[in-house]
Length: 342
Length: 287
Image 1 (tube, one colour):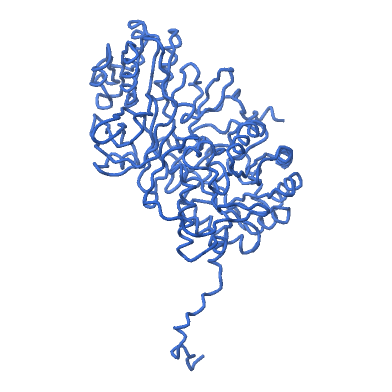
Image 2 (spheres, chains in turn cyan, red):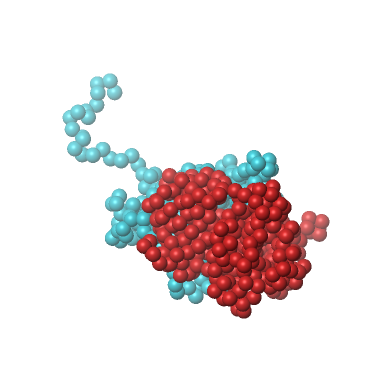
């Protein structure tokens, strides 16, 4: 295997002594850094830039039952610190995916989270059954939140009942040992209710967040910039929304595994998600800027967490949610005696 | 095999309405073939709000010399990202990924080749002409643009080609009109076997049609808007007919940018033709 020579922005630091392993339900991963669905294809292209077996897992582009051409072009518009896309789930269909892409990933030795998408609950269940019979992957991510479908009614993650219907069906059609993650949309009024409904329907964990629906108008043509008119906004521009979503879902689900994603550029951004309550992170759009980003984010995250005194990264999960820091002992002198008016 | 590296700007010089950027890229000259492209990051992600890399076809390579390996890229200042690139100075550092994409297919035999460039689409053509001349091919060049300032590579073309035809829309240099107005006559004159073209989609569509009509093989390098340049984002697709006769939405960045002219469905670019592999079923037929 030949691989691109990747430049180091700074001299490679000594590997910090920190345990980066994480758990997503029944699956243990050596790194909490994953690719993001739709930003890594099936791993092959990125493997030319970094060793895809070195990160936590490759999350594949959402696959559907049948081959799909996707939407017309233009499919993309650059936006401030982000981009808008309207690909429309172009892909080869599940059978070609299994024969070509999943087979390659297993041969390569990568851990794999397969993302599935469907137009109906039955399609999701059928995909889950085909994958159960095939095997050879570590977890499922159920994309019920792709904004680039013609019918907004197909964005299952916009309603608790439709989200739970898909997740329940997939859970029943999947090997009980395979964790099922529901990928949710930020474009809802009460994310906690939808997250709870997915977990009650059998989701082992949640992926937060998919892109948020946006639009750009080209002022030269004076028409929508995308052929699909609206598209999904991703990149650093949406990071605060994503961190907020992880925080809110952690409020209602203190124990459930969460994969955080949305605009992660570097280790510091990834650490924000960990502190908010994510057990793992997906690195997505930044790959279009820096194809070796997932490996870089892993190294930077390890160094940032180690610098802050963590021996295990999982001890930093939800650390921003801790009780008020204790008052340092040397500050607890006579001066702190209660004033008379209390 | 693409390489990601940090390259140092050697020079940025003006050429008509364009800028030619020379940047160190050790190892790339040995790997690059005519038709390959390079992508550059715009600024540092911590300070730049421009996330997406910009793609440029490789204009030339120098494998030796005091800078080690360097590549030349032609930049049109057409927005904040490309403007930032034109403002780089000697010694500035750029994040480069190269070489990318499928290059022009070169003939095994010393045949007659006609190279057609529109605007700065002529950037890869001198690099290509050198490779063709090395194989003993006859090389004729046609360059067209809206105005004289928007032509690129005229002097270099004259140095290497048997004949050079220049056209401008306004007649400010060469013949007045579109380069494709003069294409059929040029094919007949040079007994052309292969047409190579790079430029705007409209020009490529006309070149491919004229070449196919003349019974000549054509190779067209397309300019599609790209987000990643490495095959993962699926934004730069266009409908292309495969060896099996089936139309698929192919990625310009990895399955192109060079396609056989007679295989691209030029009139359908920007759409999903209804017979495309995996095309949505029409609303009426669904019920």
